[in-house]
Image (tube, rainbow, N blue to C red; front, top):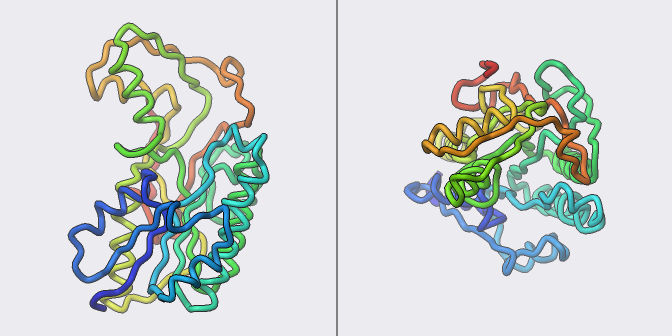
Length: 282
């Protein structure tokens, strides 16, 4: 389908920038990115989208309130961005039969499970961030053309993420000792892999007339490691000399509780990391 229209809500975040890379050489679609100056999730989203007087084929939402700790004291704002605005977005897409792809988080789970969470597992968020993201999920899943993709431990060379935080900290001060929790487990997920997989899926559906698969899916990296393990990998990747000490979560208290186990399983098979279902421990 030539010149299909794809709107990406978000422009400066790591996932949006990875989508920009994925779409930049694709001539069969027109990808348009919207920053906060054009689409503000703190204002009525349905009204803002309607005022554009255009109907795209697909909307990809990369916008979210992701300040996990601040959400505990900014619950109203987190709910507005992660739940209310997403509900308005879903209503707009349902009205105009637009495919909506929305991203969620492993924080919808409490992390008490000992095996990878599937799409069918019960949600039980520990804090405001997870609760508001779950509400957004439910709104999108009520839309007949909605797709929710849960991600965990997202990282890239863009935006704010653990990978860049650790890399920059070690690069700026080789003598700095870093203390990183070693009792929270997850699968680091490359945002570029996500964007490439999703953009390829969209283009196949639009160009090859592949049937859309709507619903809830997981996308995850393939290796199960701790934040401490991840930090060591980053140190070794760049040859930094910093000392990294493993600590427990109790030694690094935060306003919001984190799931101790954030491993996702993509058993539905629509969106997978580079090595699919394989899960290996460090």
